[in-house]
Length: 343
Image (cartoon, rainbow, N blue to C red; front, side, top):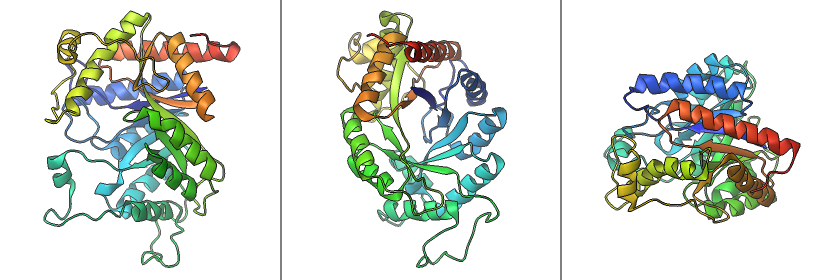
């Protein structure tokens, strides 16, 4: 099994956005030494306790501070941007750090006000042309836009090889099938609707076709993104999970409450109406427990889907605690390679 990181770049308690960015650089270096495969940063807007509005910029700092771990802009919310401009940024990263950059392609709302601020034409309705923009972006990444494209005569760094490696961020079977049809990597989210993850993974494996684009791939590549909270004991893990549970309960409420900081344990318990034990579902929204319990859950997911890479996200605001947990997981992976992990 391989492990990767999806970092929301949460501000440390009492720290600034600059502190959070510098912490992420240190974390990328540390997880590289632990043998993690990728370090991706997400694109979020108007989230007070996160410092990640421009992952395509910050990816350069992460890649420059590391030497082996793959760095991902994970992902680009393509519904807000010109595919051409996104491709220029990604091709620049790929030229600077050849063979080490991933680009996750997604779509999402940032909230009514932030969505409006991101629009170039703020009085015009935005068409749903995401599928066409995905294909255009892939064509730019390999300088092989189709002959019918009006932009066929424009190239981006044509003296550089195709890249970076594109991935489709997928929750549903529909998105997974798009990744398969285009011959791209699948970043399968088990965040919002985790029960959909095995179906999306199966749809990708069933429909994969080698890419006709130079930036695509010839054989399937996939990972599953999961929210993981680890503790030395089950009780500690369940306590550590409470703040992120509270954040997402408020964020998904009808009022869409965006808190200015991660709540502490007591605040989180009050928001949730008490302590919440770890889920026992086959595909839980949060994988919570000791390293052995977490590994047992991930192993079941891997067996069900045939996918052996997991990208973990934890939303902890204590850097020392995060690193300890990554060390615990890395050690558990090493143990699982030497013998079966038991729940």
